Length: 274
Image 1: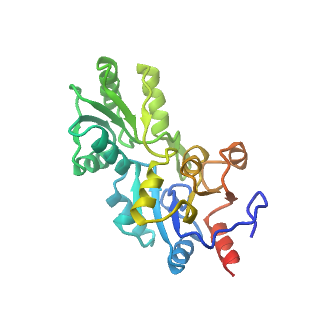
Image 2: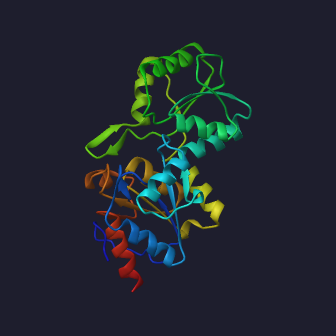
Image 3: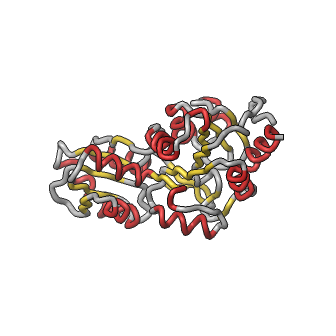
C-alpha cells in the first residue's frame, strides 16, 4: 500500500511502535476508528507499542485511567511522558536541586514521586520547570516571572515546545505558547525537554532492547513527533488526524510516510504483510 505521497510503505517488520496520543490515536476523549485494531495487530505480530507524549499535564496513572476507559490495553510500562523525561534530567543534571514548578498537580506529584524537591512559592531555587498547565492562574505566572527576573542564574526548563494541544473544538495553548508569554515578560527562553529532542525515543529503545531499524514513531506534529524521530534516526509516520496539514508535512522535516489516520496505517501493515 502506498502513502499520501505515493511511497510504497514497508512496515510489516517494525517491532517497536512509539505513538503520540492526542491527535494520533484519539482526540481528547474520542478514540479514533481503527486504533484498537491497530494496537491489537502490533501485539499479535510480536511487537510492542509505547505511548510517548509531550503532554505533562497528566501523570502516567492518569493516562492509564484515560486509555483503559477507551478500551485500550496498557500498563505503566507502556508510557513515557515528558514529565518522566524531566525527572530523569533533573536527577542526572541537578541532584538535590530545589525546583520551582509551574504545572498541574499531577506534574508536581510525578516530580515528587521521582525524588525531586519541588517548591511552589517564590523563594531561592536552582531550577524553574514549566509544563503544559491546565490549572494555570495569573498568580502562578507572576511567581514564575518573578523568580526568572530576580534570580538571574536559575536554570530554566520546560517540558515541551508544543504550541497548541488539540481538543474537540480545535486547540488550546500548550506549553510552547505559555513559554512565549513568559519570554515576553522576562526575556528568558527555556531549554525544552520533550520531543523534538531524541532523548525520549532513545530511552525507550534502550529500555526494551530495540534498534533504530526496528523502531517507528507515529505522530501528528512535524516539529515535535516527526522531528524527534528524524533526530533519533528511526522511521517516522505522519498522520493528518491532528494538528499538521499536508503542507506542513511537505515543509518538513518530512516523515518517512504520511497517512490520513491510524486506520490507514493499519491497512498498510496488513497489505505489506500479506
